[in-house]
Image (cartoon, rainbow, N blue to C red; front, side, top):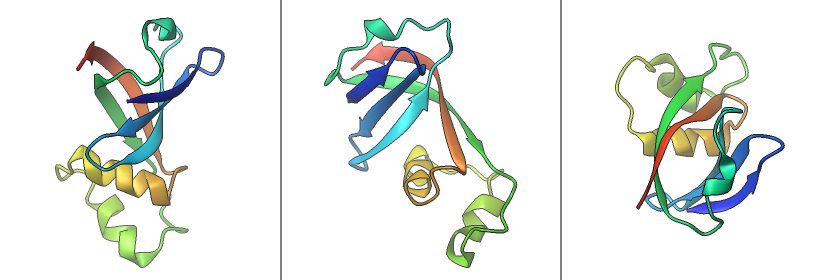
Length: 98
């Protein structure tokens, strides 16, 4: 569900219904963010980017970041983003109404 959106920053904040966690999603300048409504429910296709700089990550999460080439589900990335928001980045690829 879309919680807030910023056309100037090309960013939306969404609430994932599976994890009940909010996180930010970046959009391209080409995407018309006005088509999304606050409190609207959508299905997003996302690209997920992670950092390679692991020196400040606690040992509990090192395995997660080191095993990125293994298929993690999106819920794992959302939960990790909550702990390390600067280490995981979400970009919007496509959107459809739920």
